[in-house]
Image (cartoon, rainbow, N blue to C red; front, top):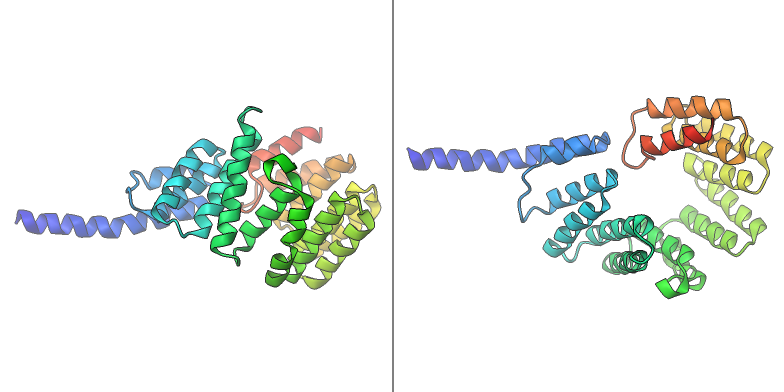
Length: 281
């Protein structure tokens, strides 16, 4: 009887763990990160899925130190995972942004190394490729960055997605102060993905940054027509207004509506919207 009971207990635990993980993933997708972490405790020492989710939840909570711990365990268990290396790179990148100045270069270098490894493991990992491109674009040479390195990634980006290639070209041209060239590439990206709200918003924000606010508003209106009340449209429109110091009452309304929306991990957190709201006063 004891053996039978033990067998039943083991069987229940084997079925319970995936169910708990699925529940935790649902909570994560609702940006309920703390609850997601609690739902999967304790974490098995050999569960890559749990380490992945725990790391992403910690990342969402801005606990980058803990996220690194989880992602490193994920990498140890699955050294061939491009996704694991990519997330570890992202966590190190955020650590670099929030660490003391003396510690930041070390974290930044580790971010680059993991992005590079993620792309090496899977050249089709577009998100890792884009993050590596951004790193090369923004980081100084002594940290392994550089515009020439960013340009060297363009053929790989082009092989994956034409619109993303045009967007990357635009960012590179803007970094080189070639603003007409950057605008051409942004408009081309929007043409290649006519149903993409993000591509339209990219053009709108560029026009606002370069002092062409009336044109920017037209593109923001186009994005709103494509996807009315989409959280991304609400947030980006408000952010554009605030950066341009225009239409601040409308920006406040949009941010409040955004914070009441059903958000997911791919959207800016409510805390970021709250910071913007303070700037709009």
